[in-house]
Amino acid sequence: MGIRVRFAPSPTGFVHIGSLRTALYNYLFAKQNNGDYILRIEDTDQTRYVEGAIENMLNIMKWAGVEHNEGVLIENGQVVQKGDCGPYIQSERLNIYQKYINILLEKGEAYFCFCSKERLERVREEQTEKGETPKYDGYCRGIALDEARKRAEAGEPYVIRLKLPENKDIVFEDGVRGKVTVNTNDLDDQVLMKADGFPTYHFAVVVDDHLMGITHVIRGEEWVISTPKHVYLYEAFGWDAPVFVHLPNILNSERKKLSKRQGDVAAADFKNKGYLPEGLINYLALVGWSPEDEKEIFTMEELIESFSLERVSKSGGIFDTDKLNWVNSHFIKEYDIDELTRLAIPFFTEAGYVTDEEALIKFDWLKDMMTILKDRLSYLSQVKEEAAIFFNDDVKPVNEEAEETLKLAHIHELLNIFEEKIKEVDTIDAEFGKITFKEIQKETGYKGKDLYMPLRVVLTGEVHGPDMGMILKVLGKEKVLARIKHVRENFI
Image (cartoon, rainbow, N blue to C red):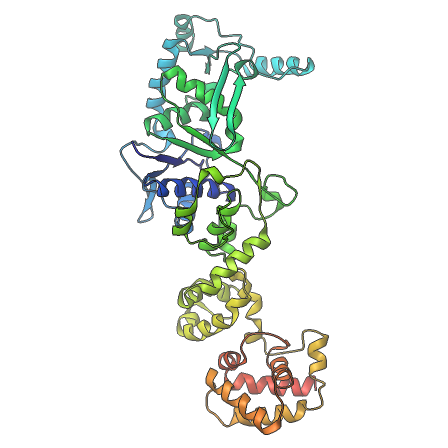
């Protein structure tokens, strides 16, 4: 059997950036090995279910380019399931879990527990007072199965727990951390089936991974502590366990786990800011994994070729927004300009620069604008600020250097001849700018900073910036003349 991995999120509202990286690593590993990448929905905790979360998650995965070939998908706006190992939504697999929990009960590897919440809380409090690790005390372990079934059938509330052996070392090899050993005396008799008839994560994940033929479980490091229980469940069933790989957390600058309280952590947050999926995915791959060479820019195809679990770090990776911006800006500069413009249009409309209808009519004009602005952008929502130079006609010098530039002795002469050349033509294009500046240089002797900086400040308020020929083309004749007049009347 070939490599089979899965991404198994809970539908709890949004895709955390750490979850997207987990999905990415599963995807890269599967693709590199010509294996299968499956998406399963783990919704056994119905109290955390958020309406629309499945659709949102699937749409983000599609946007990011981390797409699975089996499991839960969206087709024509509808959630569907494809594959031979379904259902792929856990709440639709309750009869399967019931079958396998009965197997464990019959083998004596699980037992009914009738303890009330009040008793469990009292036991934990007593253990805490004694300085012990709070865990279930095994009160119901000795109840005979027949008696327990009768009590359950009579309507007495219960859960079903895993019956761990005493003082047994559980050993497994982690793909990142190496050999891990945990003694059962340090573990709890984990609840496998809850009072509502739903399995816990710990039971469902083992049953599902086995029945779906998962060969490698690649997930976050928060599950390391639970893995010995999962390993024991595989033993109890007589099944071969998959390879376990626990990825380091993504940390903030204070080396703490990323939290929504501290800023953007949802993949949708970055999408909504105008990060390109190629940029975000490239950067996320590097947070916890290091390529063999010092290369930092990757296409998805290059990531698939280069990725290896052996080079995943044991320690948490720092989420560096500056580094993300640098990576994303690279992709913006290289992106197809038509597609980049289409992606930027929502931000132009959000800023009130154009309407949706105007954006279609003026697409080529916006494309020229994006050609100018793309080298200044880390993410696309920045066009709302950067494009202001083309829409705000009350131009003013943005800093002291710009103000001093407008005080140059030759500013009046330069503006007069520039204005006359603008008036001589019907329309302005980029070529016009090149020709005009050469003519002004030849006629006046002004060149370099003495020529370009004053005119740039007049048109944009800034001393430095994009190509002047393209600025002239985007502004057009009327706006250029209006800005010359405005600056002359107010600042010179």
